[in-house]
Image (cartoon, rainbow, N blue to C red; front, top):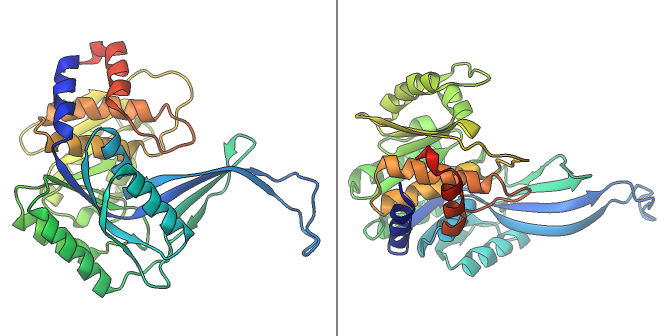
Length: 337
């Protein structure tokens, strides 16, 4: 793609309508100092000091902020938060972006807002503290979510389905409900990114990384999965799911497979320290925006590859990619087109 091709495509993003359903989370970053010399008068234990706290949208929320950074103006959120400080922060962040949170419901007591808490000790991420891992959503609230999604589908171009937590919003039986909607609304492009339930979705484009691909097929993943390995095993999973497959290959790039053809983009030769956290969300958001705007899979692979290369260079954050940032990389690495 030329620079003008990419610009024309991005100009279409403001007109598309995308819905995101799934596990909305916060990424909470803070610096933790464990050697302070202070002891608590109440417990006689060492006191740790925290500083520089910051929260950003994670999981399905990171997909939303990536979509809006790309220029998608109409993004609808379908999910749940807890009645807690993290849920209020998530609503604030989503509303600040301008996302439609009409169907972001506050769950009853017992549901914790999903949080990845990431303390940084001496410049390194320490043991993560997660919230929301034991959530159980009652069927009444899930039915309410599905009613909202179904009502929105007539006006949506793309729907992203996200599942990351072990006890998530979505379960195997609930994915079956989504499969029915995929069948009933063929004009909508569905894209699924599901850490545990990817083998249950039918008819959507399924995004996986190489580890997830191996896990879903119950095969060993080589240390450096080459293109042939990805094509061979990817086609097996693609035939099982009945829809196209999008494989993120880390620094090796991205591969797309459908029943007719395949498209791939090689990873860019980036230098310096890289942070891959959230890069998959960037790929999902960029792919969704491209297809919603009428791009071909070959074009979407190229743009998603550039967008991921932008975000992996942003350290200690769930980064996003803008048109200007993508264009800088396109200029630097245009020989990869």
